[in-house]
Image (cartoon, rainbow over all chains, first blue to last red; front, top):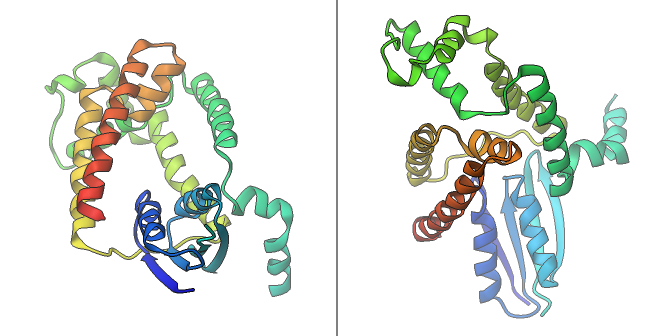
Length: 75
Length: 182
């Protein structure tokens, strides 16, 4: 049960999604990654992709225009 | 006063309209309706990049240059647009509408933020990308709005050719993105 942070601040689509996909491949089942984003379209496509994969997803709006997408690798 | 804003922030209609992103279908339906309104009111299909070319010409003329002899601006229509001036051009209005509308949308959602530039390569990619896009859009007589979106809805074959080329370009672009930014 490890926790990772992926800093995608200041990065435009589709980079946050591509980096998240790559990070998830490296992780074990049960691990959690916190993806930090400030690009509103990543707030849509990163959670959408993760939910389609069947992972647990939570979105936290940490500040104006800043989000943390918390993804748990469930399988 | 603060509690009022908090109450509005939690209101389900506010969240649905201003805060959460629209679905792709909602966006497509809105675009379809609004482009009809634009065509009906201005007489031209929606375009974006052609107007920027005119903005460039106006800036050049304001600095003392002249584009009268340039082939691109040699048609009567192009000369009329330039002579009517910046503020009388429907394209100028729709482009300003996009810029200020986008600002309004991000302010209404309380998501406005100055984003940090992370690396010099972001600047280089943005400038290079902008130049290639602008140059390509003029060669193709339109961008993904004027040539693709407005082309296809005018039942023009050129819109589909543009769309197929967009796919090829996006494929190459994503390979470059992986190479330089991952």
